[in-house]
Length: 100
Image (cartoon, rainbow, N blue to C red):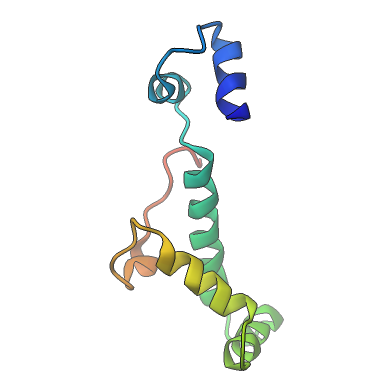
């Protein structure tokens, strides 16, 4: 809500103007879309690291651990995203238009 109020203030428009129009004018996405995009890409980045890197080894150890851990939490969040229905989407997740 604060983000939208700020956008409308910058554009100098009334608060009753459609939110989607405001974001489109600035070429922005809702904040939750940006956050979910970064979560998916972070998970992809970890999985694509060199197999001998410390980060990838930590990923393997965390993945093998019992109970709740970071990798399982990441996977659960990605699974809960409504726009992801195919588990292979992590292999082909498109580059976000606002990221150069």
